[in-house]
Amino acid sequence: MEFATDHLVARILLTLNTLGFSLGPAIADFSKTHATNPLWTPHARFHVVWQVLSYCGIGLISLGLIWIGGPTASLRLWLAWGLALAVYAGFFATVFSMPMYGGKVADVNGIPPITTVQVAGRAVALDVNVTVFCVQVTVLALAGLAML
Image (tube, rainbow, N blue to C red; front, side):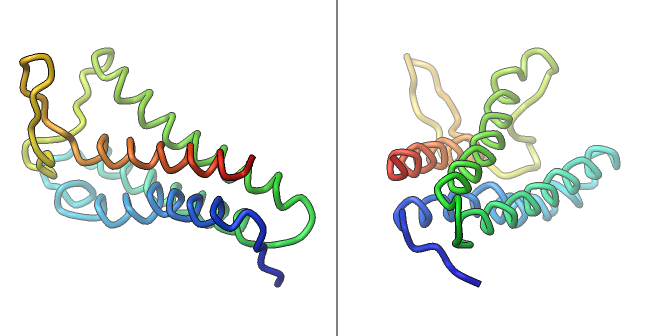
């Protein structure tokens, strides 16, 4: 198998980004705060396991698109970029639509916020997922710039 070596910076950034939406949630969500949380309904636990396993599968496909060489390598990089964008866009669409369905980014028995900061005189908790995924979207943007 031939490994692609062009656009190396973009490939490394996309790899980190892919691990961020696949391996990261697998580590965080297959735990007592999510998949085995007794306070969650069984159906909610089913959905989180399904989601994480799906993202792991998408991640494996993305890693192949990123690193396997051959014709259309640049096009495959953009496809991996688009898959990551779809995952992160879905996350942020879910965050911004929480008032419509009564969602929250964290549970009281879940992963605690990183810290609390003052924004316009109001205390705002920095959620781990939102903070990490903001960094990941920045990495994704940098990967896109590196592919230009």
